[in-house]
Image (cartoon, rainbow, N blue to C red; front, side, top):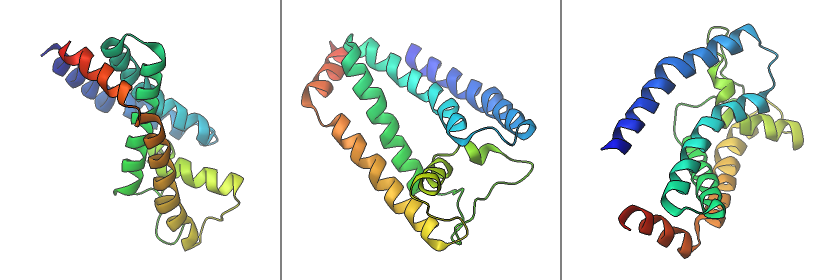
Length: 161
């Protein structure tokens, strides 16, 4: 019951205070770097999952594997379902009154693809690269991190133990 109350409190904090505050901050600073926006957005999720993993397992390496693996799994899932921040024509769907798309996982993947692989915005290849390559890459990392049976035994032991 305490866990559910904590999750409910976190959801209220995140949706009623944190996301509007991030949007306001980003609207005042349109030059704010994409990778920093992404990390800022993911930090809250990661810390929550890290503490849950640590409470259940009591081991730092397992809680790190669990939290990073689950974050990668959630990113893969979020990229693969709408709403999207990259239009089918390959352009970013950021408006002047809503900068939260810069916090989005799919926008971060598009930025990475553009910055490092030079895949251009404004072309359908960007859309397909983000939603196919991005989803598969994060899902692959999640599987690598979460495949250990001992991790799941430790987590289940922490829940029922």
